[in-house]
Length: 237
Image 1 (tube, rainbow, N blue to C red):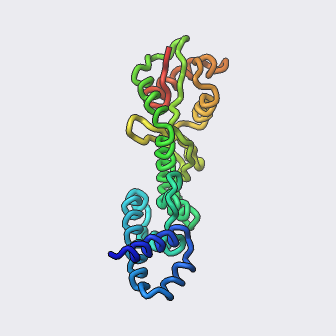
Image 2 (image 1 turned 90 degrees about the horizontal axis):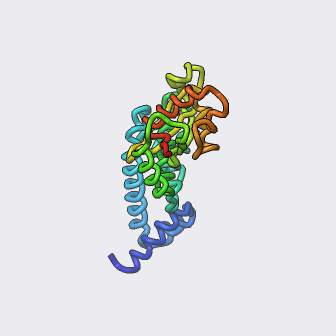
Image 3 (image 1 turned 45 degrees about the vertical axis):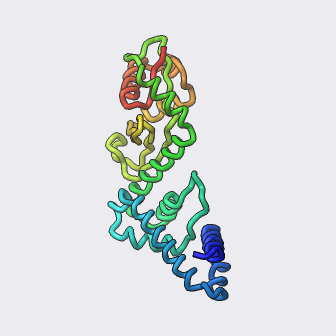
């Protein structure tokens, strides 16, 4: 491959990544190497489709036409420039979420977006993740008067469309995605206990009595033990 052709490929990739399709098409028409550009475009799209299909294996379980959806997305939106917070897979899922979906399909898309959001947070705060996991490993149960509750810093709230078992089947439910060692987990709780966890997020690290705020201490102590066992809360004296 000549240096001139490598330079052309680099420029074509830049035009595609920045969404400058009209300039790219103009160069195809004017450049003697236009056939090479068309091959480059086909190869680029093929590789992009392959990568998206591999990332969407879980979401594809809810779709009979995932391949067709990926093709429509690639046709509609150019490959994005590198962005560690919003890659092609996240953009595809957001694009997909704006299309007519069944509740099950919407849940699969939302679940995958939640997982990606959590992984992005874990990359941003790796040190915080390591500190919490070490603290969790030495958490004494039950929570005592001198115990301070620390909430897992690697967490994101997400909403799923299909009612969970703990929601009473009345509608969409908020869930908590969080990191447990090297795993991504989801916490399902009744709405009142979800409110308690949100309140803990505003107070932690704090003592159990501060979290309970005068309410039934035993209920909060039981929930604290459950959250420690799940890897959502760590205790320290």
